[in-house]
Length: 188
Image (cartoon, rainbow, N blue to C red; front, side, top):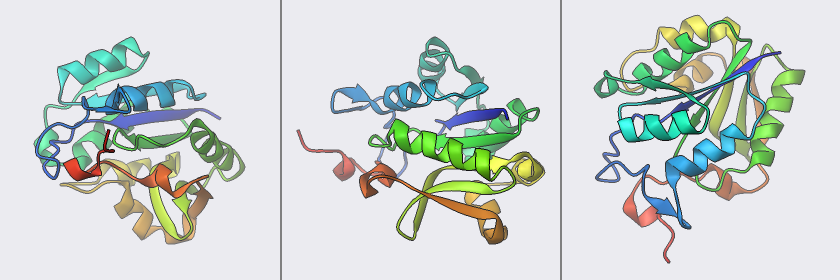
């Protein structure tokens, strides 16, 4: 079974006030933490989608296929569309974000293992009843991912197909935490 990884890094950081992905958390920029995490997992293809050349360059160096996103202003759907098109020949796509600094390789691997057991399901990381990122979609849902518009992502597809959702527990609730505002950054 071949699974792709699409790392979405096109956001404007509006809630943060600027592009947050190059900011260090515990000494390592958010985007670099994500690239390192996903580069270590057994994906058939790794893609990074961004409107920022600096992030695309970091992705290229980490072995990711860099996909420029000239339509980032369209919202999340633009990144999902680009990433899905780059992985259409695969069995599944994991969509990850770059602002979860405490996500662990163990949780990403647990998600991949769950998808191996449930290849027709949407596998999503969770803690308790709280669903979070990343989420892994089977190829049967690629057309729906391609049809997304505006500032909507895979969550919309998940809400339409709750019967297909398989939740995979993260080891710690902190793994689902994302950096959205400056006050979310750990104090040094």
